[in-house]
Length: 117
Image (cartoon, rainbow, N blue to C red; front, top):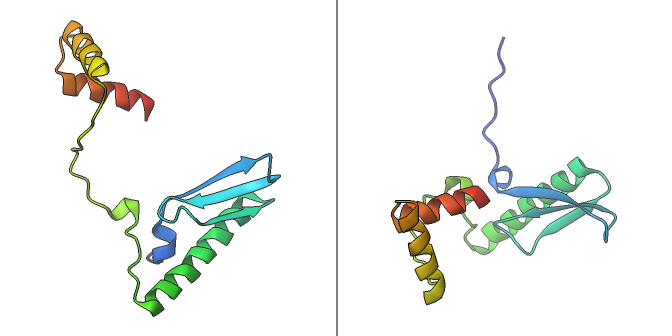
C-alpha cells in the first residue's frame, strides 16, 4: 500500500540553506526569499525546522495584514534573458576570447557562467 505524499505547505516551498557558523557556534539556516530571517541551532536539522516554522508564522502574519507573500524561486518563471552592463575593456576582452574559441559572445559568456554556478 503506497502512501500519497501531502502537498508541501507554502513555507516548505522556499529556498532554504543551512551552514555551520564558527562565530555562532551553530548551524545557521537562511531562506533566499526572506533575506532578513535566519535561525541558529546546534543541530543542523533543527536549524532548518526552526526557520521553516518561523517562515510559516511570518506568512500567516502577512496573510492577516493583506501583504502578498514572495513567490518561491522554484515556482518562478525565468525568461533566460537579462541585461548586463560591464566595463568596455572587459567587453572587448570577452569578445576577443569568444572569437578565438570560435563562439558567439553569448555562448562564450554562458559557458563561463555555467562553470561558476
